[in-house]
Image (spheres, rainbow, N blue to C red):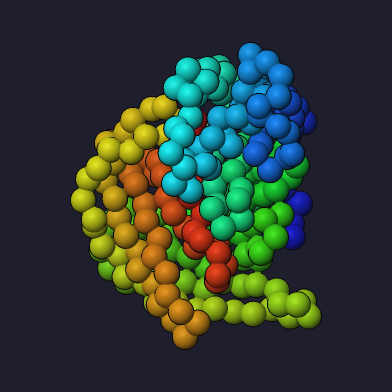
Amino acid sequence: MGAVLEMTPARKLTCLALFAVLALAGCGNDPAAGDLSDPVKLAAAAVKARIGKAAGASDAPDPAMVAQLRAALEKAGQPILMVLSKTLNYAGLMAPYGVNGGVRTWATEQYVTLSTRDDIVVATRGFGPDMMSAIAPSLAQIAAGHGTVQRRYYYLDGADQTQVFAFACTIAPEGSETIAILGKAYVANRIGESCSGPSGSFKNQYWFDSRHILRQSTQFLVPGVDDLLLQRVID
């Protein structure tokens, strides 16, 4: 993942312009401060409220605030991921930063990044505990809803030595349900991927909408940390 990402100057300017109107829960802004008509504070409040809900808080995000944020993001016209981790107390909005060899990197305004191949996480940077790289099944294998696949994750230990974790995974359908992503409901088919190996076990889940887009997923990051929740807000 050390190669330079390909990005045209126009693409970079577009992303920087988008980051200028987005705020992330991890950036230290107080969403309660100031006028929520400010799109930066609005985004911060909506994202921070969303992680509170994910963590089981009783207070749901204000629907009017969420609707305003969705409208602003749709108007911006960039694909957007919402990424959450309860263990890391992290919630952020990510936009595309670049593509290299079929791997798309998504980034926050602070360049916390998440890299995906076919929407499957294969690397992270800036989360603290990070995945250096991964060998993972394709989205087509997951979407098929059955079969067995292999995964390998690569991490650095405290001595900067590479540690490899291998898992065998079974894919199976888990039915249909309605999910809500930033104020918009989707009927989705859920598929589970149960993985086990010498270092333990985990389960990824994937929600595909009626257009077969991976609308939501929970994906393994590192041992001892809750799975990342990824939601595709804007296509």
